[in-house]
Picture: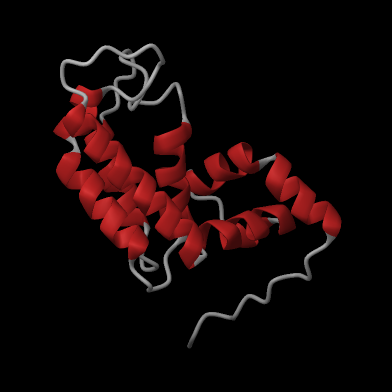
Length: 150
């Protein structure tokens, strides 16, 4: 027997505002496996994350990250940026993640949210040398969770 289909609730202004204002918290919830049907703002955020243009933009950001890390060796930066040695060590996993994000096939919001957090969380392994998690592990996890079967 097929699982029941979920019909998204109508979008209300309040839900759209909550989805924008609470994007970080909603991304964290989705990355941790919260079902996107659990709440209207969560469902809206999941829908925004999984749209093809959003995913392509995220894929381009990952590709730029890899390209910049390749050219940043030995340069001195005045801003806090990604840890280039961690990006270089995770090039294969990041490339797979970018490729999967750019594919036109539907994806699971959890994987996209994990990718967003990987790129934006200043306390995560991409920016924080004290973070014990590896960029490779986070990128591989995000790529694995993009599959709708995951």
